[in-house]
Length: 283
Image (cartoon, rainbow, N blue to C red; front, side):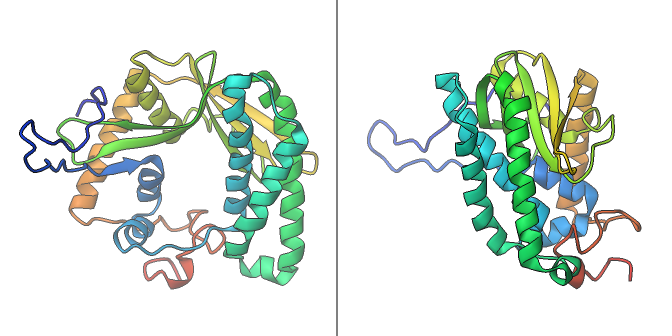
């Protein structure tokens, strides 16, 4: 299985104005799909095969709004080379969170604490995170691209790989940003499948390697902080990702969807919207 250069193809009309040729669109695997399959095959089965969509948790709403605020700033900065005033970026987060939080699947613990109270605290945390990130990361980062969608065609393979790269800066550093309730472990960036996928997508789309990769984690501690974790990827790591995709595709084609291992932290009502109706989780 080898990545090849991506060429956009459109349905064609022949020279004699005959019938249009229908070009079959090859299905893709995204990092999100792959990560879900590796964590819990049952969650993948219900989401992508059965089409059961569940609302995000509160952390997901905060993270999505945080990303939208950064995208709002970085997209215009590509050409202006200037950050927006931090108030505008915070307002973008606030408006987005007000919308996203209407569709949150609140946990029993959050409901007991009071949804309005929890929502207000999360929003305040998010606004502080946006301001801290703006001062510590955005101010020294010049984007080359932002939220760039890249499809990596893969030969002799039932799926292509699709990535949406958070940010590539003018130093050819690929960034992925996250929001967390606690600091990440020191080797999280080194083990990130997402960053490996971004590296592959960058190399195929640019026909040259990146200079490095970086995980920027905005941590919701009492005093907000940004933890920056630089990392690199070798060809061997790219190869492991492709081999993982090969086996993931075989599992999907053969209907093999293993549930999350017993004791996994993400197998809980806080992190999985399917938990309450799951028939294969530990009881």
